[in-house]
Amino acid sequence: MTMTPHTLPAPADAGRAPGEAREIDEAIAFNGVGMTYSTNGGRPRQVLDGVDLRLARGEFTALVGRSGSGKTTLLNMVAGLVDPTSGSVTVMGRRPRDARPHLGFMLARDALLPWRSALRNVEYGLELRGVPKAERRSVALHWLDAVHLRHAERLWPWQLSQGMRQRVALARTWALDPDILVMDEPFAALDMNTRQSVQQRFVDLWQSEEHRTVLFVTHDLGEAIALADRVVVIGGGRVVEDLKVDIERPRDLPLITLNRRYEEIYQHLRGRIG
Amino acid sequence: MRTIDEPSLAPPEEREDVIGPTGAGRRRSLLSRETLIVRGAQLMVGLLLLGLWQLAASARWPEPVLARSPGQTASYLFDAAGSGELWSNTRATLKAVLAAWVLAGAAGTVAGVALGLAPRVERVLTPYLDAANAMPRIALAPLFIVALGINTSAKVALASTLVFFIALSGARAGVRSTDAEWLRLSTVLGAGKRQLFVKVLIPVATPAIFAALRLGLIYSLLGVVGSELISARDGLGQLIAYYSSTFRMEAVYGILLLLGLVAVTLNQLMGLAERRLLRWQPPADR
Ligand SMILES: Nc1ncnc2c1ncn2[C@@H]1O[C@H](COP(=O)(O)OP(=O)(O)OP(=O)(O)O)[C@@H](O)[C@H]1O
Ligand SMILES: [Mg+2]
Image: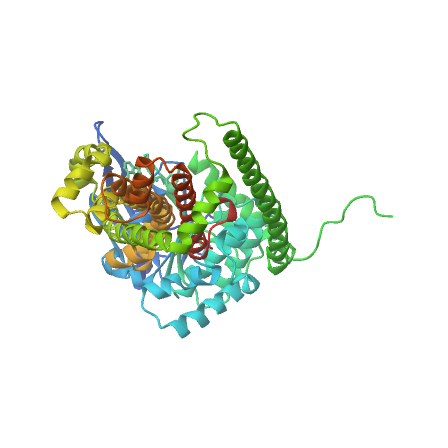
């Protein structure tokens, strides 16, 4: 069974016809993806079993589900770090490994390299891709500025606070100008206040330009609804819910929780995650 | 009247405490006071030891034939420095120390990195490496002397057997300490094998490699002097052997002191280089 994204009925149901999705360019497609991990000695563990999911270009999708439901596994497939044991994944119509130049990747742990200053960490991806020094420096400075860390360019990672580190990671991701952002609980390690400010910075960046495709894993249902166009729930190895978030943009993060629609979607999804 | 602190309205990034130039400046001045205290205490300890030595010498303790005062030792050092005996032999020892350190340090580091990256090969070789490393090196000295002759090569060979294993285990541990997350991220950002090696593995391994090389330098000195004690034409170890056999204990003590001085100097130089190279580490980790 393939689940198509739907909208909660009422107030104004702008449900789309099933065939319509095909006409949109696909950024990421999971086709009947299954994953069985072999465990040392024990029985093989089936984690995913027939995940079908298509992400349109420019769409912001949040992936939620219980711990161990296979969200990180799906992201790793998009990044070409693991291959599905059945089915296939394509990114921009190609094999994930070949689509890496389109990808920005961000994790809960910032993974800053401790021997590089904040600026040189932002430059890192560009350096790996062979961008000349002068150019990557100016790009990196631009994005450090965008996350309000221009004053910290020379500091070593250990001299930065958690929130600052994660913003450096954000700048590093953005500096590559990725078509697709793949993020695994990127703000989970932050305390609530810092998280809100980094989230807002992130939404502002995303809303300020032509939308990049985002696949965003989170444990925080509120975060998923506040940020995304669409929330996908993974459970029992497959997609159990695929819901449009019909709340207009631009969104203001702290205020969105007061929106009635937010509350409805929240309650509905909570029921689906179980 | 305000009774509680008002929440700050400044955006978070402007409230954050940045360890900027002011913070670093404060730390440096604290450090220099700290340094002063340490240096002062070091001087006191030195004077105390000298005093104890003088006491032991005047009491002719533990054995009259061994008892020599700091003064007698100083006068030997003064004469030997004048005659050039000290310099030529120090130079001979240091030459061998550096040769062994550079050669075996480089070879051991390369071998350690390779083993760190090839766990299966390492599993095969581990028992042999352990066995080789457990051999008392001094027992190898006659062997090297017969094989290479009584010359610098024999000293270098013996010291190398010590330095090699130290460098090897440091580099191996260093490469192993890589965070899987860094490798994942770098791979997705587009790093190839060569880039992973140069931009992640080597920087990760640098602190451990450096610590090993620092230790290796001292062991190089021990190896060379040990070899010279057994048999050599020159070097501080050879001088010690000669003066011991003629019971010129003030000379023996003087040369031992000189060796200590050499070791401390080498260590300090390494520390200096290390601090420059690893200035990205938080001070506590250095
Ligand atoms: N390399 C692996 N080898 C074996 N099993 C694995 C491996 N990676 C993940 N698993 C298993 O697959 C399941 C899903 O893992 P995954 O990390 O994708 O979950 P997740 O949804 O991201 O969970 P969380 O929300 O806790 O991060 C888990 O039960 C885990 O034990
Ligand atoms: Mg996960």
